[in-house]
Length: 577
Picture 1: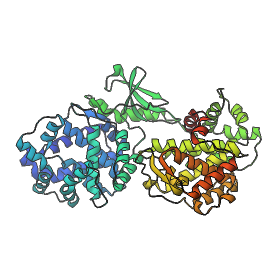
Picture 2 (picture 1 turned 90 degrees about the horizontal axis):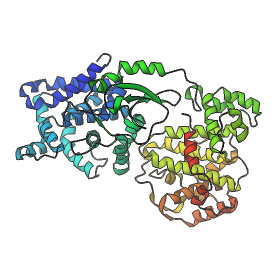
Picture 3 (picture 1 turned 120 degrees about the vertical axis):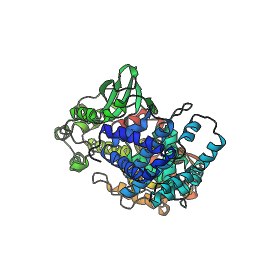
Picture 4 (picture 1 turned 45 degrees about the horizontal axis):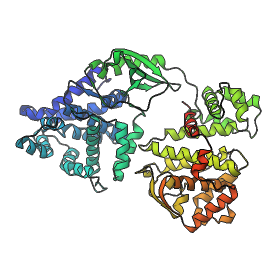
């Protein structure tokens, strides 16, 4: 495939429909192998060249095509995204895509009838139950020489049944699990005449929390990290208008397309906005090929080029090596004028500090100097560092991130509340330490995060003080030995992290104030999010000693209520846009 364009995308859709009709055209069976191989390769290369155009197809039901064609297109794009996210080689990707394309090649009519809740004849019922075996026979007749496709089809019926019963295990063929998952996801998002489709993000989150198979969860995790936060083509209501999300722009803006008269066609105008609402629409029916295909190529490229401008580096700019944070860590004490000159060179950081300072008072802080004077020059480097860590946290993507980030942000708020009770230095030392530990655990043990529910059923023994329990990581994993706190955090906090990693050897009488902050924050959050807590004698002794050191007997609910609840939201919002 040369440079992928709108015409080729439309041809890809038509070719998919034609392949699905080959079963009814016996004279074309010998051509199946070259047709299937070419189409699978085209899907993969199209996704490589313009993932935005391909992903947008998941948000539109092509009105000109029937249900099964739409289903297979959705399923194939999902499978293509999965195989790319897992880093499979091209031949494996082509084989998986081919397996999707032929899955219903012998049962297109039956699939359409079932989607419309129509009754199948006895002959149609028999064909439906044998659809995968018939597909294998058709592949043989077409001289298709691909072992992986045959293997997938031979196991697909049993795998789909196990998936529906949540009984898949590591013993089941992984390639077949991918095809079964792709089909399951596609069915959830593809509407029928009687049911609405669901949003892919919602379905992925449900699947991640619901399925027991560790392989399926790792696939869902990889796919979620691979896809953008908001899929291109996502429609949502904005005041009295209907908008379609297109892509992200610099400086925290988003490019959308505003439909004329709320009709889902290519008639409308480009419309940049700064925020995306949480409530988005599921897959929408579309008759306009200009919107389905053409808009995602030359028209979009021209408008994006017009909106993109040179960007300043953000709080965490990997290309500049955390430039602003490193600069701020070079001194223990800052003169206000010197600090202002450093911050003024970074408009994103300045803006974030003004937003953060606004949340600390009833005033609206719009000037950087006002924010610095309000927060204090020596506290500013710590606030910047904390916001950068929260920004990194928000960039770690996984399907149950809403549940997990709520726990983490609550823990950040809680440890600062605890530190206010009996710690004599900046409370950001406490929150930065906790965030460094959390991020190290999330990035170091990403695939172990499961979190089947928002609550743990039981938190027993020393699990009450376990960071793995807070992060919903199973199996329980030790705190990484490679966590090194930045130079502007006192060494006493590094010692506290080291002791937390080996908490079972800590004597309550030797507990430091810093360790007491960590122990109380983790234990209180685990208790808050657990259905039942069964502490052991040592965990009770450690928590009691921490309470004595910090002179507090307040619960997590009481400590959190002392701060404004929107602080958690504002802290998140202060991350660089």
